[in-house]
Length: 286
Image 1 (cartoon, rainbow, N blue to C red):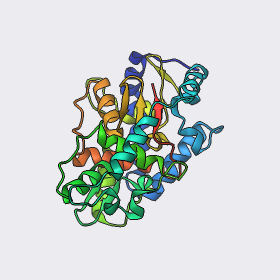
Image 2: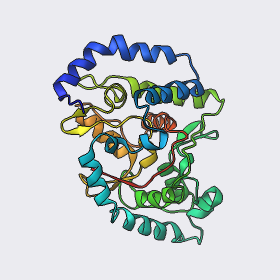
Image 3: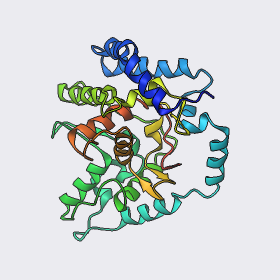
Image 4: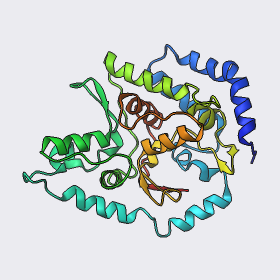
């Protein structure tokens, strides 16, 4: 295991960004989502030849026997099980008009979470599962729930659990608006931000498998297949956008606001990277 401190990574990011990351992005600047996915997943298969896509989703636990052991201990009694049960009850609870969440989703909401975020042709924008749940509530005369944590994420935990084992399946239709949303998410992912000039790319692509501040950096492919997650640091279950906000703050950047068009497009691109990876959500992380 190679260990790199934050100063090393910051220096490496600045010195190598033009030579390495910019070149990598430029090679896919004119490629479509399908070509991107093939190239991006091939990168991680070559970087970690001993791991298949399913193994990549184990993230940091692939690179530390100690943390893997701790994770296995935690999973003896998964801390998110109560969230799944509460989410199931919340999902089944009828609205005041007698309808329920099941009326808003295909297959009554069972086994569909692995297809979100989705491009919504009617609005011309990306819709996350959180957004779809609140849209359902508002269409039935209910107040929207708060994002990032709480009851909304518990509902998502239940819905995600019904897709466990199904491969992530994010579609980018041949619609200029969908492709533009995908490209914006891609741009955000590869753009350096904050005083340290880090991008998502630097930690979870270029430095994936290495260590910073005592934590192993998980590869980008497979991450989204685990959300929502119960984080020991949070002491509760939280959404993937909550994690994005935390990452942006960690690098000293002003975080994007949850459920904005830019944040949703970032989630769209990032989740698309995990297409084909079996869902393993909700999950547990430190």
